[in-house]
Amino acid sequence: MTAALATLYRVFYDGVLSRLPEPRAVSLGQTALRVLPLDRLPIFRREDPRLATTLGGVRLPNPLILAAQYYDTAILRRAMGLGFGAVTAKSITRHARPGHPEPNLARVRTAAGPGLINCNGFKNPGLEAFARDVARLPHRVPLIVSVAGESPEDCVELVRRLGPYGDLVEFNISSPNTRLVYAWNEKPQELRALFETVRRVTTKPVIVKISPDFADINEAHIIPAILEAGIGIVNYGNTRRVDDPRLSQGFGGLSGPEIFTATLDNLRRTRHKFGSQLDIIATGGVDSPEKAEALLREGANAVGYFTGFITRGPMLARLILERLLA
Ligand SMILES: Cc1cc2nc3c(=O)[nH]c(=O)nc-3n(C[C@H](O)[C@H](O)[C@H](O)COP(=O)(O)O)c2cc1C
Image 1 (cartoon, rainbow, N blue to C red):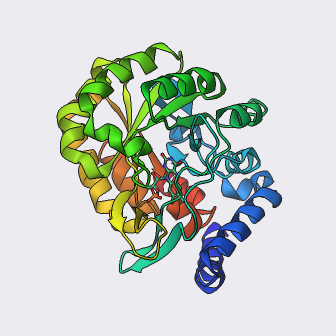
Image 2 (image 1 turned 30 degrees about the vertical axis):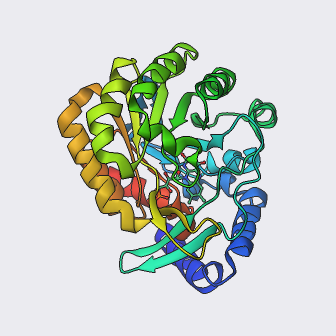
């Protein structure tokens, strides 16, 4: 039944969603997610204590994480019933941001399968409005709140204010489509002090989401600084920066199966170099049970995905969990 639904969704994605102009497809998809009570249907979930894992001491019922993109708590609430072991909210900035102008999303289709390039530019309601909404969100599974700060003061304020509403806090230094957070990678020395401060202002486990575009700097400077600050979790990683003249900024972040090989390579090297002292969430390009399983086999504590949720539909989590159990 789940496999049949997955096939139906593929037909719908290929025949309808991927043919609509991107903004209409996004609006249709998000409205459906908000309105349809899919989270009430057990078919999307697979509950089994053998799937449980922990991240920074927090128990996740399974190792699948919806990666950051949604800030609408109606959508986050539904997503919590769609088989994920944790759900990540969109990176929130101190002040509301309209995001980059359209076109800010383009589709790519390669031999590896369908993917996306976005220059979303952190469209979000800002700290105050998001804090009011998220305070009312029940945590059916753990919630990861994500922050994107431009200055050390922003980062501290965001972590301090949003920490109480998440089970874990993700510190985003990796989204490539604004200078806002990506530029942190050019300042690894400043990051070291910032990690320490951020660690002190929340009691929740902190995750640092790092970029696949900075593998050398990550492994030489950023991950050692993360560990020295007493932060034990990285999410490796975000989209890969690529040029694309279709987008308003002329470039954006590539997600989907084309970045999977890099995700696997980055995970392997990081696990080898840092051993078990680090919890690793591997994110980037997962759109099949085989890919999720490969990452967990190579030592990921959890696996994140976003594009696969769009291109393969809400059944993907259950399909992955069935494979892990088998
Ligand atoms: C439209 C869009 C918006 C995103 N917004 C965020 C964000 O706010 N914060 C963040 O850390 N990652 C963001 N991401 C990156 C995803 O969380 C994920 O790390 C990336 O897409 C790679 O995984 P995937 O190939 O499974 O999509 C966004 C991705 C997309 C496609």
